[in-house]
Structures are given as structure tokens and as C-alpha cells.
Image (cartoon, rainbow, N blue to C red):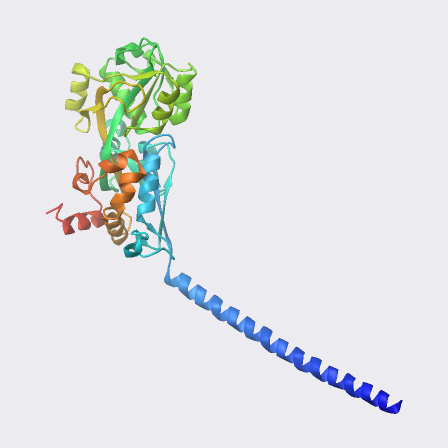
Length: 360
């Protein structure tokens, strides 16, 4: 009996010693884990500070028009966040640690104002709107010139679409008198150009019932008979009109004759151009007028950053993204990057174009 009690006490002591040693080891393990975690956190913080992220916005337009999807393609092309595969291994060929984003907006006028105020880093604008904003002339007369606007590249031609139902009885711009017409929102380049076209044909806003609808909303209003016509200035084919033509019989009104010729002669940024037959389902081709779409920024943006962005835009591997990303992408070429620029190039972009021989 005494032997059994002694044996029990010995086992109990052994158990306590074992538990003490086990607990001590656990404390060491937890301490080791905490130290490892702290070291990993320090390394992560060091890595994050070594890879400072830059964010760069591109103001585009309504989601149903051409600017927005093209802006998405370009944002993707120039972005290269940490962890991306190297360019030569099939990864991003953008600017290291840059994350660019395409932002929906009201269009050209909205974009130049946002760039000038510092709200956005860059944006797309029609050549006419950019020129008027920079010089404080035309539709921007009376406002201080936005002399800090700078160009990165000319992108593609944008055609003035005047869209009506096929059975509307509207065949010319002059036939819009007394009709309900969407001119797009006042912050858009479409609104500016639509008013110039109306004026060339002897019409003013008082001669029509003006609606300020954008993209899909304008297309829906035409389809449902709430308006008689809509203006769109966009690179063809533009999504809102593609969708409309797929479920409604429509036609495009030509912008031709002396009035169109006078527009082209008076405003150097306008050019006579065609929208080919079949661009939109069941819609005949027309001759209209077009302006250039440009990617612009502010003189306040870093020369080095804009140089690298321009270089990434024209990287050979970016060509694939442009070609498949949108129908208009194939028209965005390095060879036409300086066509029709009405404002100065950003120094960073100028440096790149000089390097490749486009500028002497």
C-alpha cells in the first residue's frame, strides 16, 4: 500500500515536470512565431514602401459610347501593379507600380474641366473642345484659358451621328425644326458640336424641343417614341447605336452640302468623313463630319510619369490589346499620334516622340 502511494506521488511529480517542460516549450514556440510574424510584417512594410503605388485616372464618357471602353483598354495597357508578370513573360508592359482607371464622365467638356481643376489626371476630349478650352475661344469664350492642358496623343476620328427612326420622315438636319432632339448633356463635346451643326443649318435651340440625354438613355427614348432624334459624337461603331439598331429600324441623317462645307472651312478641326454601310445593323452608310479624339493631361503631371505612360501606350505588345479591345482600337496608331493636335504636347510625351523620330 505504501509502495503504491509512493509510486503515485512519483508519477504525479513526473507529470507536473513534463507539463512544465511542455508549457515552457510552447511559450518558446509562440514567442518564435510572434518574432517571425513581426519580421514578416517588417519585410512587408519595407516592400510596400519600396513599391509605392501610383494611381492615374482617365476621364472618358458615358458607358454606352466609345470613350469608356477605349479608356478601359488603355488603362489596362499602361497599368503594371506589384506582382504582375514581367512584360517579356507575357505580363503587363505598363508603368511599374502604376494603377490606371477609366472613369465614366459627361464627356469632353467635363474632362477638360476636371483636368484643369486637378480632379482627374487625364481624360479624352474632342480636338475642338480641347482647343477652345486651351485658348478660351469658341464655346469657351469669356472663360479663362486653360493653358495648363497638354496632349499625350491623338487617338481616332469621332463621327457626328444624327440618328432617327427609319419611318420618322426626317431626312435632313433642317427637318429637325419643331422636333424633340437629344443634344446630349451640356458637359459633353456632343452638345457643343450639335449646336454648331444646328446653327450651320439655320436652327437654334428655340426651334427644337431640347433633351439632354446620354448614351443608352437617349437610345431608349428614341426607341420608345419620347424623342424624334439624337446626336452622338463618337467613334463608330458606338455601343448605344449598335444596341438601338439591333431592335429598332433606324437611319443616319447625312451632314452634307454647303452647310457642312462651311463648317469644315470655318472650324479646322471638322472634316468630312463617311460612316460606312453596315456599321450598324440594317443602316445605310452616310457622309457626315468628324472631329479627332485626343488623350490630354495637365502640365502639372510629372514629366517622367507621362513619358513612361506614352512609352507604354506605344509598346509593341500594347498593339495586341488595342486591336482586340475595341473596334476603334485599330485606328489608334503611333503614326497618327500627332495628327490634329490643337494644344501643346506634354514634355514627357514630347520626349518620347523625339526619341522615336516622330518629332525632330
